[in-house]
Amino acid sequence: MNFDLSGELTALRRRVREFMDTRVLPRESEIVSQDRVRDDHSLLALQAEARSEGLWTPHLPTELGGLGLGITGMCVLFREMGRSPVGARIFNCDAPDQGNMDLLLRVGSEAQKARYLAPLAAGEITSAFCMTEPAPGAGADPSNLRSSATPDADSFIIDGHKWYSTGGGDAAFLIVMARTSDDLENGATMFLVDRDAEGVEHVRDVPIMSEPLLTHREAELRFHRVRVGKDAVLGDVGDGFRLAQARLVPARLTHCMRWLGWADRVLEMCKAYVSTRRSFGKELGRHQLVQQMIAENALGIHAGNLMTHHCASMLEAGADKEARPYSSMCKLHVARVLCKTLDDAIQMHGGLGFSDDLPFAQWYRAARAARIADGPDEVHQVVIARDFLLGRLNLLV
Picture: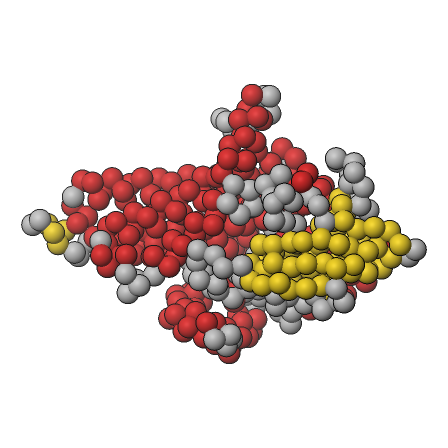
């Protein structure tokens, strides 16, 4: 493995870093405040600037307005963008849109790409991915899928109940996972459904631990005999579970990229504070227990960075199946590191860290979802242990 970046990628990373430092971070609180009243004019202004700077949708091919980067290049840029919870949205590569774009690019028909992918890539619309259901439906175990799609002449009739469909309330379209047979492996299918289609009900945005932000509003949706044509099938009938796995493995990794940038920024903020704040006769950074927290978080971030690069290199080489347990290792580790870094940041800053005068408390409430989203810690632990015991996981790569 070679961790040296090309001159072109190094320059691109520098440009994204500068854009974040000089334009995004100074307006971060402004964007968050405006979003509380559903005002997006500052966000849209920064999106226009990112587009004019040639930094728009770096994950997409150039014909769709992107930069045509491979997943290793995405690792480099997404870390920089992830330093702010609003960063990825400004460059149009936030979840769930980024994963939905990649899925449409991979398996969408030309008509589907024209209707859904093109405006999504242009930032004209947003989307949602509807797989998770309230109990006893699909959660960490997708085989519990209850939503159904029944053939009817040249159409399908979708009935179901979804929740935690991020951004579903405002989305222009939804990728809906529904059961088309009882086959355990080939019984699910993905459908492209217009959000305003007859029978699609936005029940509510689920109140959660953190403050909603931009498209990160968790919608509860019901589908009451929603009729879609057979041209709404994404991929082929019965491909749902396979496509979900194909979408989730790189999506977990891109989450890790963004979370690493966020954790790194938090630790840099801690460095600035403990280097100047004096307590018990010396700077906090000279107390060994504070140094221990700094060291553990630095080690965790660096290890997560290496894991992410390794898994990205596997995906770039086409080893998608082999990369699955490594993506679970990345997701498990980086999600925990993000939460620990924020928790320690609050501790190091004391009452100031616990207050809303600093963003750590708000950020922690949002970051805590990282250990549940795209598979809870426990599912990833099972995957890692299973593949290791079966001899499919080489630890000394």
